[in-house]
Amino acid sequence: MRLNDKTIIITGASSGIGAAAALACAAEGANLVLGARRDDRLAALSDRIAGAGGAAAHLAGDVRDPDYAAALVTLAEDRFGGLDGAFNNAGTTGDAAPLSQTTRAAWDEVIATNLTAAYHAAHAQAPALTRRGGGAMVFTGSFVGYTIGLPGMGAYAASKAGIVGLVQVLAVELGAQGIRANALLPGGTRTEMAGDDPAFHDWAAGLHALKRMAAPEEIAAVALFLLSDDSRFVTGSAMLADGGNSICKT
Ligand code: NAD
Image (cartoon, rainbow, N blue to C red):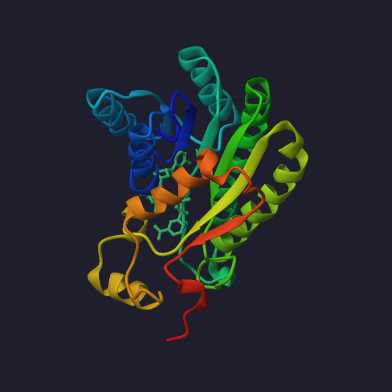
């Protein structure tokens, strides 16, 4: 039980990597606070966790809203007595268009969802983790914007690169209080974000040294590591879990 009685917020929990992380953390004894926009999906996941003997609360909302970030922390403290960690994972790719053809509104939406929301999350979570005497924040970045430029993903790459800088600063600002901050950088993962076009999946698989995409559970396992004490000396890192995508030239 690597997260026994630890209370963890997970955003983007309605599908994909976030939902897989919720199940993985629940199996390790965590109390969960699940966030995303689709209330019905969050309710179903909460029920599934409770049915397996776990504990989960959920609150639907938009991570671009600072009040939502604060409400998730309040729910963690009211329902479970405190906050021990957070997997700030909700994200969007936005329009896949060359930068010269994107609109300012499209740029703003991706930056708000992927990067400014990370600021809102850290701003709300750091005091709660301090009250608890320490904890772990994990933010989902991407190989895109870290080691790889993909055409049509300018705003996405910029937002995910920003996550890496943010965790470095959070790590040094909060380390003395026992709070760790890390970025988790998945490779191509079979989720709603990756769609269901087999031709795209084949192309994406070929980018990786392992010649396949990840299952969400394989990325969730790394989130679990970064949230747990197994990674107690890991902070400020950008941890690639990308199937060798970043080093593959074949
Ligand atoms: P997904 O589409 O299954 O999940 C995205 C989640 O984010 C969903 O729960 C969605 O509802 C939530 N979300 C999006 N915008 C939101 C908003 N404004 N407010 C609240 N919730 C919002 O895709 P996924 O692959 O599981 O994505 C999870 C994270 O992984 C994202 O940050 C994504 O950028 C990152 N990522 C994915 C891949 C991939 O290939 N799938 C690769 C690298 C990084």
